[in-house]
Image 1 (cartoon, rainbow, N blue to C red):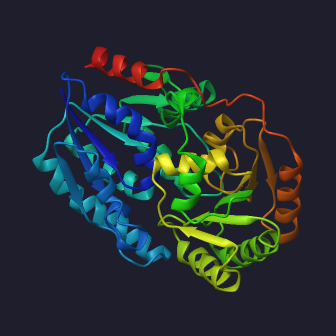
Image 2: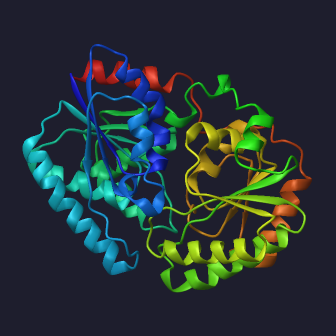
Image 3: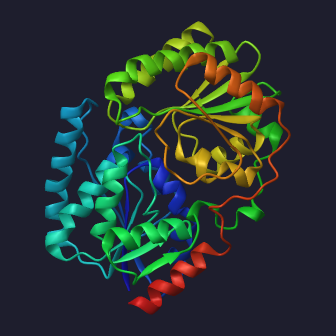
Length: 367
């Protein structure tokens, strides 16, 4: 069986990894990796090199991102991605193609496959992020797919409502949490020395723009910068840099200015990679930002998360999430509240055991 896997960013690749390793080692499958989006961007760490290190037999690369990140550039990149993938689907056939999440590049690649009858399997459909235009892209991808692997029963019900069909929708839990109960972090001393982190508590931070509030992102980036500068007076801060979203450069510029003003208290990471990022989550005191990893994964590491603004609004949450407005004082006070709490002891609603094995079994039976 020939499987294609669409990966457009460090984020989706990290989520895919347990599934990719299983498929790669199963003689039933022949697998091609189709890498595009920020994987090929020098400004975002050129994460294609990390894919190549994992030793896949076939990696296709498709470059289609325009360097700017205003609305016109994002729309142009979407169109260029469709054009490039029209040629790709014309010349490549698969029994099934995996697509994941809600990125605009992922949506473009999938939309290009519709006239060619490409059979897509969508991972992480049915979720809601009202503060990001990704919410629309996610639903577009679901509508173009024939198989659906969701993280919770609520999301399965939403996909069913969206596609007006109850067949071929499976609740498997979050892929990135597969075997998380056996996770072994990198040795603390080695990890801290590798990234030059001071051996004390740190806050793990990831902020992305609110792509449904483009007029407010300049203000939000400044509020973020002011809050982080205040927090850095007492805690070391590790910041993973924003993805290629509309107006993401506004946040990058604010973060880089913050680094100049508080260089000894701030560490900037372009791309941790999954093992390092999970270790960072494991050792962090709390998480701060508006990224999906805080919602999906942090509970499995017993961490509280300060979730800022509306980017993740509407997404189901475990009880470890502290929501706050995109305002300096609200962010600072929420972080102090999270720091004062003990480790989170509740459940992660996104975790289900053996997610990968369930998906493998389903696609073998389906095809």
